[in-house]
Image (cartoon, rainbow over all chains, first blue to last red; front, side, top):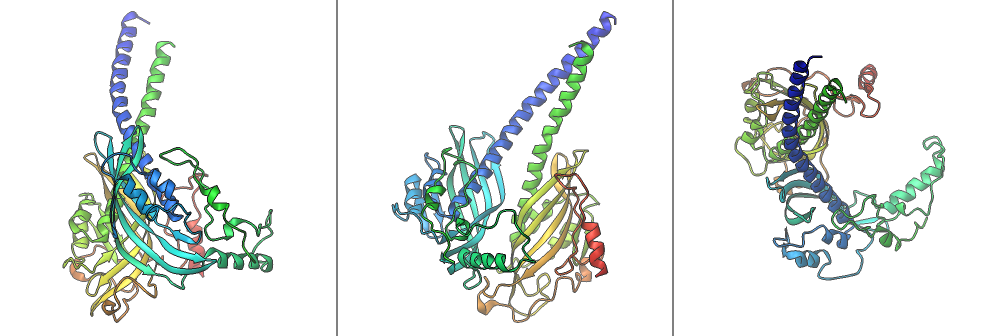
Length: 247
Length: 239
């Protein structure tokens, strides 16, 4: 190989590498934004799973410690992280949420817009789900709620947090008498598992009648720690209050 | 590393880096689809129309008929709830989106669930006439085609297949505003002639309880195999 050919090839490579370097720099910025969007979606969904069981310590930890924090609910506006605490603890209560209380609002259709500086973001979500009290399986005050969140997020020390909520409820559907709480449904499932042999094939491990999944208020353990604090969440403590289903 | 190996390495890295662009494309497309859904709730005509490509291939395929062409979105969206009735609601939450960018990087496909509450005043959409507001929960499937035009992802094709709809005993429209007569089933009639639909409805009936499955544009994400809907649809046709 002549020196000239080698020189030409080296020059070509050098140009290519410089071009790629610039392209990668541009992609790095895009990737950082995509990571932000993913982290924000994760935060909002984690919040939703905590709200189902009204896990107020975990909920409060989702919020920013800085200025501009507020909750603009239908019932009024709560300001600052202290306001967030006051709202979610019903004015400072430390007693755990009653086990039969279920407040499912599935965050769906999350659309996130990060500001160019990457420090704040906004999101729009539907919150949709069933809200009810289940007293040993008998459902009271059941409704489907469909709301829309407009949310502000802020990145603090590299961690995305919720700064504010604006919330509207376009419609609510009363579902009294239309749904069964876990106990009633579970008693039926346990009974049928013993009777309907042709319908339920022999399992490799029989159902465990003491399993807490048959009880109102059971919090299905989370595979992840809190997205803001990184701490283990309180479900095992809360589940410890529950007693197995009375058959 | 000799010069030949170095050249090969640079080429390999170029390909790897280019593939990262796909993530941005998928996020942009999901955002587009969700935005479409939020506009749909209140039937924001212009915003909805702006979600679509200006291509002559732009296609909107509804159970009542198909619109084709750059003006298709306007002929469809521009004809519904023109009075901007405040009682009108068309919530379709865009859920479980799967988006696949094609090898050319300029086209993509998507599949989504749409689920939500409707409140359709008489004289709009499939509520032919009379008084009051018809209400229902609706659920269906979208198969989407997307195209990148001047760097921006747009909807090229939308196909909507309703799966079920129904009304809860107690709904969200006040009793005195509820429609006296029920709307007829969505597949029973097409669009008015004056809308100039470009084609009839898909002759296949995907409504419950037909058991027919709207074909998937994607292979199974784990096995990479073609899924069984064609076989199932054939069997259901026989029944």
